[in-house]
Length: 331
Image 1: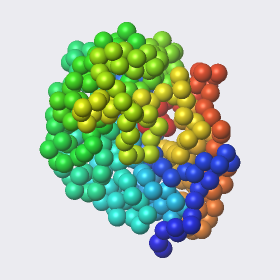
Image 2: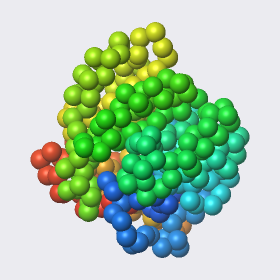
Image 3: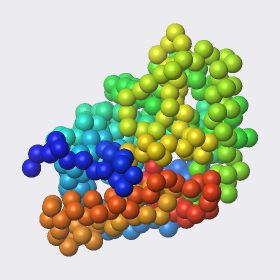
């Protein structure tokens, strides 16, 4: 069945949903304190993960309903075996214009070329510090592994390569200019992200919150920032460093939320469709899949689920509301 050009997922607030963020696992080989607490091991059992066949089917049905962008996330998606094989199946689906992947890049060195060859078009790479000791304190991992993964991705031909840096007050807030220079040197795009209160990490994230408006003003003192744009379906608002190709994106779920333009839903590894990152509205698809629902029924279920999508998150009003970790939801 080919994509229906007239199909569109419109939520109750008039927003068209054309972007699916798909978690391949809730496991991660790092422990960024704002995402997954140290010592956490309450992961979903592997038998509860959607299979690659189930994932391909769900993505195909979403594409037939008008979804054009899919991002593979986690946890850390590359800890799941066979991601490139899955990507090669998804990248050829009719109607899917953009297949991307978010990763911490620590496992990317050996997989970058196969992912590129499989049709993954873009990578977002988490990198919160360029200082090895500081990086280890934030993530528990080795900075050298991430840098090697980054350079392997660059050599494989990925462009643009987007660096995602979570702004953490008192931790990496002395490194924004260094990260700009790093991205200028290597022709990467930089995206700065405000911390969000999610689950058991809520208090830590709140304590380290930094308004990106202040960061933008600080960068403007050193760099000539002009309005900029970048292709993609995400919420970043971009500026460009005048005289260069560098774009800097600001993702501001707290200080300047972007709910009015939200175009995405998230599917967790256990087949639960989450309608909002900052709310509990969800719809389980896995039981339907494993009971043998046909495509028409699956489409009807997705449309029914979309009716649950709320107007906005409430990170400011109810910072402790979301009890699930970011890794459980999918980045």
